[in-house]
Length: 319
Ligand SMILES: C[C@H](O)[C@H](O)[C@H]1CNc2nc(N)[nH]c(=O)c2N1
Ligand SMILES: N[C@@H](Cc1ccccc1)C(=O)O
Ligand SMILES: [Fe+2]
Image (cartoon, rainbow, N blue to C red; front, side):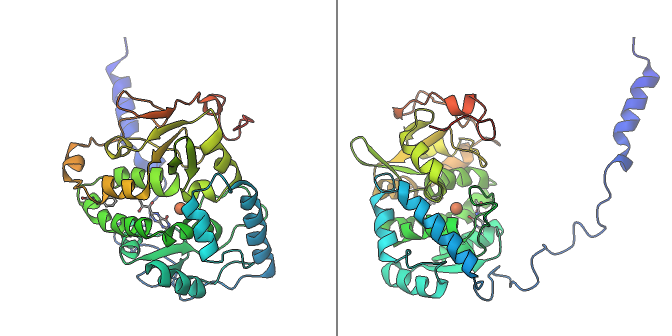
């Protein structure tokens, strides 16, 4: 029998907040921390000036992607790379890039120091400005970085913004943020972004699956893994399903969702009211990131071998 005194002691211990670190006195009232030189729009006053080492890192990353992307990246992405001349050498200059992109679809690219708050991110997208991290990774972090740098943001995202339908989708996604925040379902809308803008696949012709997601296209491994490996599921995009699906942020995806075309993506999202969907969502994700459920239109049912062997850092080979 556990004595009543012991129970009380445990309860008392649980009330003892002295074991927690001290919080700063102004924790609830202090303005959000941001670098002193960035304004309320979270933009850098001007783009970083890159060293020749930085430019060499860009060139090497670019060359490495070109080894794997032809035949695996969406045609719209490859066309965008061409239209914007992203292979001029060195980190692209945002001003010139914005001029060229602006002439095509009215989008511009603006420099931000880091991940910016959700509402600011949405506000820029809604105004057809793509916020791009303007720092570049180092040789030490050449293969993997957690925060989006200029290579991920500019090489990965910007070429797709030359596609008129995709360009409109991104703006509408920005506008959609406000509603999602009011319903307290930003995570669900974030899952849609994740499985389309970051890790989307497109079936360009029967059996010809290509990547258009920036998270795939800015790295060498996932560009191959996403379209060719046996491990991941490939399932046709279904918005109600995707917005209930958990995702991984630090490893290759267990599941990719495939669109038929960018018009199909636009129809499924922009041309539909999400109110009913938001009202029907629970407080957390319903489906695991590796799940296959009965409503799925499955193109490839993954073995999940990479994931089951332990994923990143386990020595499991992706392909
Ligand atoms: C869903 C949410 O809006 C999303 O994670 C945003 C947040 N802030 C960001 N900030 C930057 N710079 N880049 C991004 O891709 C994002 N993503
Ligand atoms: N049509 C969606 C908005 C949306 C547009 C584009 C992408 C995602 C969502 C809504 O009513 O909320
Ligand atoms: Fe991204």
